[in-house]
Length: 307
Image (cartoon, rainbow, N blue to C red; front, side, top):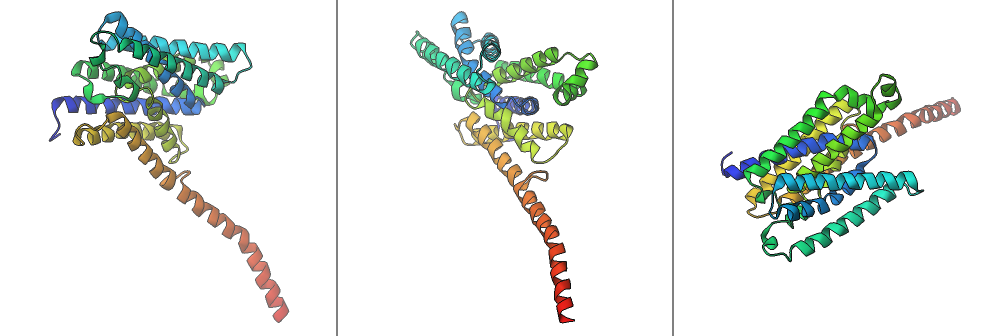
């Protein structure tokens, strides 16, 4: 691509793959009605990032990703524990874990930034994201993990479809719902932890939720929804990255989310399945069909009077 540095091309490829994986896993979260789970786990990953940095003493992405994954899984376990052992509903449990873990992460970040040399570590970029700060090694790790998630999602397409839409039938066929839930949670955590450096813990949830919701306005088919959500997610990642590159210093994460939001507005307005314009046209046609018998009755009555 003309005008792009080699590092920018690497970042573009990684955000493209990340957006594609986020779109597909976001579809699973949408149909499991766990969109807030992605928000909770992305915030819960922040303490693990900081602890991973403290253990190594430098910015080492594999260790920090491992710490983020462990922290997010602990957050998911606490959500399950609160939900199963109390009367608190799942969305309230997610809100509690989201705020507590994120607050704990910010506290750790403020303490670590006081350490010698930690101020230049780039840990602050994990809050809002800073894709431009990634080096080739970081991009390779992120891309490899994202491709692994894509393979799991696509190779087991039939199993995912059964698990999401008819779990009782899937159980009867020998497909363990507990196993599928564990694989889903693992994929969700992986996508979150590999994306927080590019998009940040605050905005990562948007990259998971918005493409799936946008795709829902175009189709009723689960397969096509997966394809469209992957295209919307990958397109948002690529467009946001290009805007930040040509903007010379513009933040990548916010522009990726803004690009996804623009695609959502287009889908909301022009979507062929549930778009506002299509819905308005359908409602207008239904009103006309309902009024036609009345109009015929009135015209018949008027002809009878005139006769």
